Picture 1: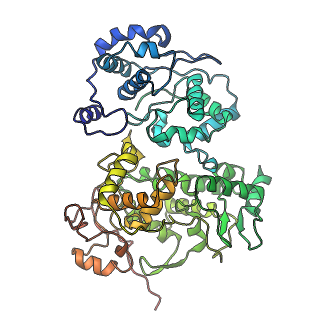
Picture 2 (picture 1 turned 90 degrees about the vertical axis):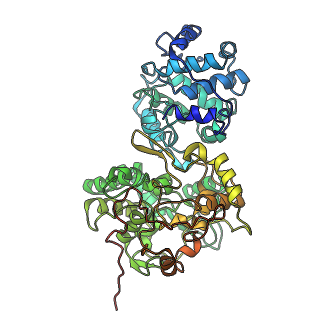
Picture 3 (picture 1 turned 135 degrees about the vertical axis):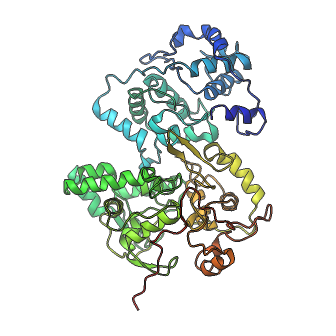
Length: 215
Length: 337
């Protein structure tokens, strides 16, 4: 199932943004070498780092390989802005991107940080947003796209359970302000723009506290 | 919290009066949110009801046993796949079509059924109560077998519907704001090719190009828009106006009214031109079935017609999908003569 989209892309049958170009198959063992570029921030086990109030480095272990590769390509092409990541992304050609994506997709997912000290009311609100949404503000639940347990659905909707709170919060705010817009069809942006900063914080700390993994 | 709920119970329902906006702040904020999404404001004299949420249920002053039943109904509504293989034979949940857990206006909110039934239903030509109406969804949209009348699960689903109608009078005189999937005006021409192009651009990322949707971990994330895992030919959404109304008001998820009327109708035309399991009312002959159910139903669908693209006669087969039978016993006439 995971191989199918790559095949379709190679045949030119997948038409949505970012997948139209044929992507090479990734080799995880070569990807481990490429990952030497990444470990200083993302750590040898791919767990990344949550930095309170700073720029958090996302956990990459277990991330869907196609989603991972698309992010690298987008950062390289400038359709996703990340001054920190851009120099590293520019060192990765399509093959290296596919290899390092394959490598990280096979690592054991690690726990998210940043939700440890959240108060129960905030966590409760976060859980509501993640699992039920708040339709009075037309905020659909996270899991309606990110899948069961918010551990990802297909290659377009990454696992977010067990991601660092600081990273989730920063990304949602980037979507809200329009600084990030490499999601398909504005599906994330249109929701993020309806979220208050409190809601963004609540859902970030709740998701960070959940069992990590990738469906 | 209980006081808050009482306020909802007492003031959650309004009829827009001819004198102008006399909504309370909560109702006005509710309407403002919907109109900011491009949905129309209530018309004069329409009934506006804000159904209670599950958080309201926790705070409600009702018997704990009743709360358990309503919670079970909510659970069945949002995870109907727990009945897979026994009552449900496709990938649908109730909440796949009734967004916002059955509470959203313009997404066929479910509470009106609780206050307008028993009532006459043209689809089966007799008076239906709430249980029989829910049975209809199982028969067609879930390509399944209805829960037994009076069973624990049927009680729970019914209770959830009725709870959402809290505070609304029975048989309300006013038309309900946002009831059903109100259809945009049908354009003069519908285009299969344009529908396909729009589907692939706007819908396929979730529902996939072949309409199979997406399942993860044996759970439905994105429902199938056609094929064996979708609703059968007897479901309301095979009617073009219902599909167009659903799409226009609700899709893509989180972006209601982002498509033009023409686009919504073209996508509906494309989607409803694809195959799906047989209508459980099938007599064994498509022409005969069409004669029987065309006037009340299939005159709005493409069932029995030659598909524009390739001349394929739609619905001319005996495929029931994963369901090991055609017609559940619950489909039967009633008469009081």
